[in-house]
Image (cartoon, rainbow, N blue to C red; front, side):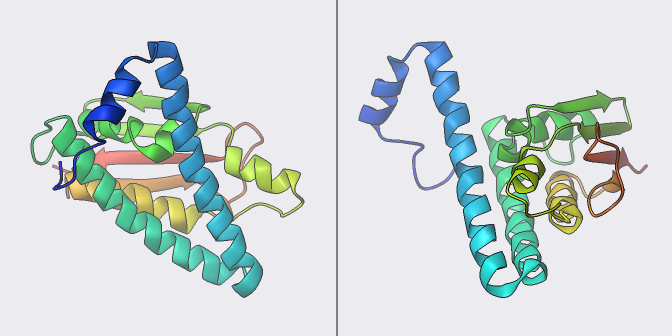
Amino acid sequence: MSDYPLGNVEDREMLAKTPMEKLLDFFFLQIRNLWRVDGLYFLGIEKKFGTEPATEIDAGVWEAMAQIEAKSLQRMFNVEENPDVATIISLLRRSSWALDQPFKAIEVTAKRATLSINRCRTQETRLGKGLGEFPCKPVRFGYLRNFAKTLNPKVHVNCLVCPPDKHSKELWCKWEFIISV
């Protein structure tokens, strides 16, 4: 994957002795921690400079992350160049963003897929803190578009709904992935 191994021998041996259920809990905890750091950085930038600059920075970070993550997953799971929509969605499901979304729905056909987030932990946390909805569309759109484009430039991502768009209580965002012929 890279010049650096994924963990050292002792760490891998220690984790290999962990029961699978605990290992999965640990894995998801680490993904949650990644998102906590992301949220704390965002809130710090937002507090100092405002929501718009924080969103611009966040969008740039996640566009770059999309390319890194897509290529890393492609190598790890031995996916050929220019995969179909189903394969892209399969890799996206393994991304840190999608794994941190427990309330998602995915529909896949040969040339089209949709991904819906029915509950959003980030938005619900913000609302709980009295911060209001985060207009996350530019951040998420850039991430998803760049993730798909990195894997196959013929796949287009469309935003069907995402804040600041009006949305129902049961649907925070919905994305469409289409492969052009």
